[in-house]
Length: 145
Image (tube, rainbow, N blue to C red):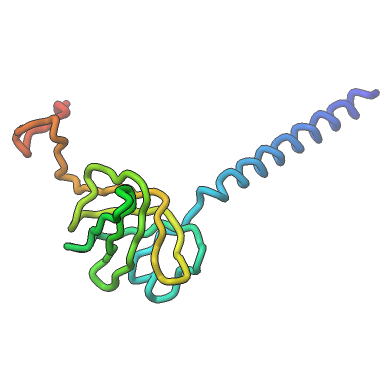
């Protein structure tokens, strides 16, 4: 085989390898890709039943209800404009509480309930872990240069 043909075969193999890696990467991300929606967008009909998405908002005060099985909770996510009932089976994060921020991964059910597969609790930038104790809030943790 001539050197010119060898280079052409190597270039075609490299191109096929890159295309194969791109297809594998896209198929792996397809399951993880999800739109971020607010409760107002969900109630406006922008979320389809069964569509994978992330629902973000605040946990409404007085809405957390633990079910008899001990692992399922129901609560209401709100953004101040609209509210969406959420159901989650599993262990919730320690920061998950009423009047706190949360993001839930899951899907809308036909009855209008968001079924969460995973819940992430959000905190504000002033959050101080309990292990830090009573450190002054204005203390800088990184020295200035």
